[in-house]
Length: 184
Image 1 (cartoon, helix red, strand yellow):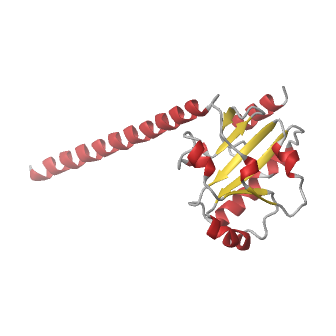
Image 2: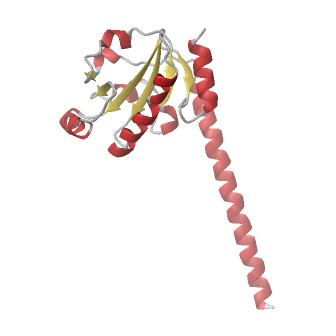
Image 3: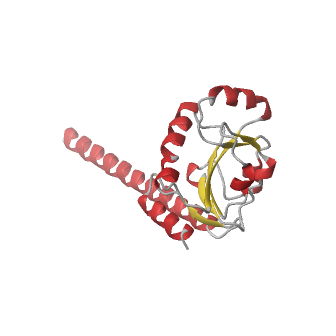
């Protein structure tokens, strides 16, 4: 009889654990949807003029700043260097696959002023142009951009209105929407 109750108890605990895990997953999923829906159609305060610009290609920064659409990839200080390097090499492929005249892909790194030299050392092989946000302005001025990585990749238009949130390399729907929005 004791074994029967133990099995019943373990089954109950197992089912309860599954139920809690499912509820947590759905809560996080709903939370992400809420975050994304709040970001869309809001103005992003991205002052590229306030950031340090780092380029190996003699890129004219005004061409980037003045483009009609800007796809922002934001990397905060929690990102690991090798992960970012890998991500940039993969994500830069979309600009090569679908060159869009009125679109700039902008990579912004949140680094403290004292870590700028470390950044240059760690990212010396970087082939992309990047902006360094040494005053942490993106986080300070944009309430929708949080530590949640889902808020770190988004498209803004010439009026700095957020038009799309998500990574076009990792999500075919986002890529489809990106092409649709920028080819209007």
